[in-house]
Image 1 (tube, rainbow, N blue to C red):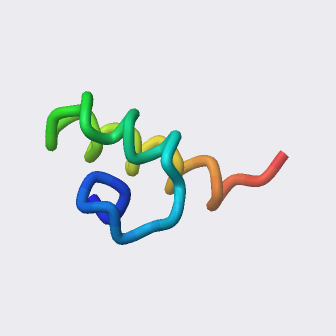
Image 2: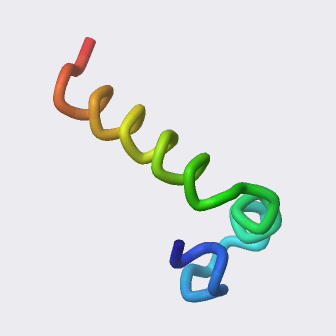
Length: 40
């Protein structure tokens, strides 16, 4: 949500975050959290 609110310095991520719904952002967050807890 920080990217959507322009609180993080990434123009590319800001543009992507604007196109995602809250549900889609939550889904991406769950995916990333699962990947970080299970490194290859």
